[in-house]
Structures are given as C-alpha cells and as structure tokens.
Amino acid sequence: MNFFRSHPPAEFISSRLLSFFLRLSLALSGVLLLLLSCSPEPKVEPKPSAAIPVTVGSVTRKSVPLQVRAIGNVEAYSVVSVKSQVGGELAKVHFQEGQDVKKGDLLFSIDPRPFEAALRQAEATLARDMAQVKQAEANLDQNLAQKKQAEANLARDLALEQNSVKEAQRYKDLAEKDYISKEQFDQVLTAAEAARATISADRAAVENMQAGIQASRAALENVRSAVEASRAAVETARIQLGYCTIRSPLDGRTGSLLVQQGNLVKASDTQALVAINQVQPIYVAFSVPEQNLTGIEKYMTLGRLKVEAFLTQEENRPEQGWLTFVDNAVDLTTGTIRLKGTFTNRERRLWPGQFVNVALTLTVESEAVVVPASALQTGQQGTFVFVVKPDQTAEARPVVTGPTVEGGTVVEKGLEPGEVVVTDGQLRLFPGAKVEVKNLPGREGKGS
Image 1 (cartoon, rainbow, N blue to C red):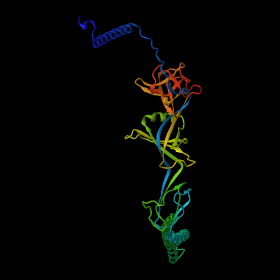
Image 2 (cartoon, rainbow, N blue to C red):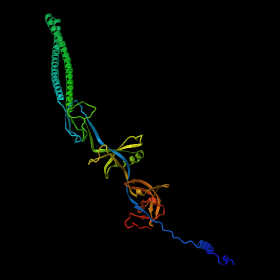
Image 3 (cartoon, rainbow, N blue to C red):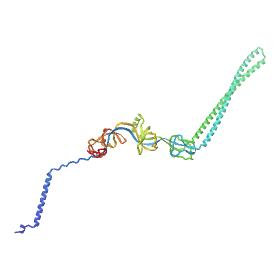
C-alpha cells in the first residue's frame, strides 16, 4: 500500500484548510452585502436652520425738513482795501495788525504840513477876492447914485426947457407986435436953445451912467466868480488836508499791514495800505444744481428760507442764517446756480475763506414716515427694505423713498409707522429667513 494515500503529508492538509476558509469568508461577505442591500435606509431628521443675527430700527412718523445740501464757502460781508487819496509820508499807524476796528476809528496819519500850507494860501486868495467883491459892490452903488442924480438933473432941465419954450413963444408974439425989442426976444430965444442943449447933455450923462453901471455889474460878477473859485480852492485844500487822516469806513477786522510807518505813499496807489473784512454779519456762498432752482423760487415766495452752516467737528451746533441772494444766471460750465446766506455770526464761528457744509431748508414736511437710512437696500427691482414680521422672519418690501435728513429717509410708499426694519445684517438675509434681533432690550439671543 502506498503510504501517501493512507497518510497524506501535513503540508498538503494545511493548504486544503486555507483554501476552504478563504472560500467560506467570500461566501459570508456576499451574504452580508445582500442583506444590507435589501434592508431599508434609516431616516435622518433635518437640522433646523440657524437664525441670522441682525440689528433693527423702527419706522416712525415725524416732521422732516425738505433740504438742499451743498458745500459752501464763507465770504466777508464787505471787503474794503484802504488806500491813500493824497501823497506824502506815512506819519503814524494807529492800529495793530488783525485788530478789530469800528467805523470812524483812526487808522493812518499822513504828514499834513504841505496841505495845511496849501489851505492857508487858498484862504488868503479867497479873502482878497472877497475884498474885491466889496469894492465892486461899492463902485456899482456909486454908479447907481450918479445915474440917479443924472436922471434928476434931466428931469429938472426938462422942466426948465419947457418953460423956456413957452417964454420964447410969448416973447415972439410980443416981438411981432413990437411990444418988445428984437434984442430981448433974441435973449429969450437963446435961453431956450441953451435949455435944449442942457437936456441933450443930461441925456448923454444918464446913458453914460447906465453904461458905467453895466460895467460895474460885469466887474462884480467877475469878482464874485473869482470868489466862488477861491471858495472851491479852499474846500479842495481842506478836503486834501482831511485825507491826511485815514479812518475806517466800516466795522471789521484788519488784515496784514502792507505799508509801514515812514514810507512815502501816493495818491490812489495800486497797493492798499490794509484790507478790512466785515465779519458781522457774514455771507456763506454755495451752489446747487439748477434742477433745484424752481423749488427754491417757489418756497421763497412763501417766506424766508433758513440756511444752516455746519462746521467741521461741530456738526451738532450749526450756525443759523437766511437765504438773501440768488444769482441772476446759471453757470453754464457747471449747471449750478450760486446762492448766498446771511449770518449774524455773533460768536464769530464763521471766518472768511472757511469751507462749511450747508443745508438750505425749503419747507418742513409734517407727519412723514421715516426709516433709518441704513435699512435701505438696492436690488434689481429698485429700493427695498427687510421688514421683521411678528414671527421673526424677514420680508423683502419694495419702497418709494424721499429725501434723507440726519440719517433718516422719508418713505413715501411701502411702510407703516411702527414696523420694524433690518438696519444691519442684510447681506445674509433672504425672504422668509429667520432672524435673531440683537439690539432690542429683552430680545437678545432669542430666535424663532
């Protein structure tokens, strides 16, 4: 008998067992996969979506001013460049640079001596001409008296001539009747002729006196004209002397002194001695788009329009003024219209050259619906806000907006007072999203 047939070796038995266990494990794996594929899938409960944290604000109803805002520039109410009207040495400066001055305060003194001498000379000339006027008046009075005397002589001689004529006629009749001698008649006739000659001389004297009177009157008019010229010269000299003291023409503040004491100045020199700015009241000039002009003119007919100037770092304390100037033309290069507001500037917070933010109030819209400006969002369909509903979900609500004033925007359509809108956190929101309000007392950390 073969030994290997009745008793196989150990290596042969081990390989057979290894093959058997391998086939058994593969079969069990197939059965397990079959069982798993036939069993139903377990149900997985969906996790609830987390609430989105947001901050909110309320829709309110209040009075809102309708305003036009711009950037303005402060301008002096009046600017005067002080110049000398006479030439001479600048004798003294009576103020300090940057000093406040009142109207009439003495600013400069110019050496007055040349002008005082010119005044005295003009006054002497006037005195001489006035003496000549008196002499001409005396001459005229004398000529008038002489004319009066000549007219009296003429009247007397006319009367004598009439008597002589009558006497000559009477003697002529007597001579024709031989009652008197021819010599007597000739004497009477000669006397009548002499009376006629005297009358001619008297008339010539009256005419001469009349011519003398006309000459005296002409001389008087000439010297009177000279007196007027002398008076004008005196007044001119007095004015020139007055120009030696330069006074402030207004209340204001002086700038830098451009000409120092001791320098020579010229009449109407191009360089000013100093510039004075009037800062009380003061202007704020600003420009607005021409589209606003119609509304501005409309509301100006209803009353004065208030202008507020907001200073940097003092936005909560604006200066109050009134619109006082609207330019007569729109700037073609910018399409804007230039306006000016007048401010009392009691505290002198406004200064020429300063830039300020300007708010022109046209009217006040009462009972307007106002929403925080940060709540407004812009989408493809226009402006909208997220409204927080009572169930703590967000609703996208389209709105029609008006002007924005002090962080609040007027909503003309789409919201009602008392509604709550999201002011921060909108980027994560979508219609129907759960929200968690963070800024309302008693609701922090509470979701839906």
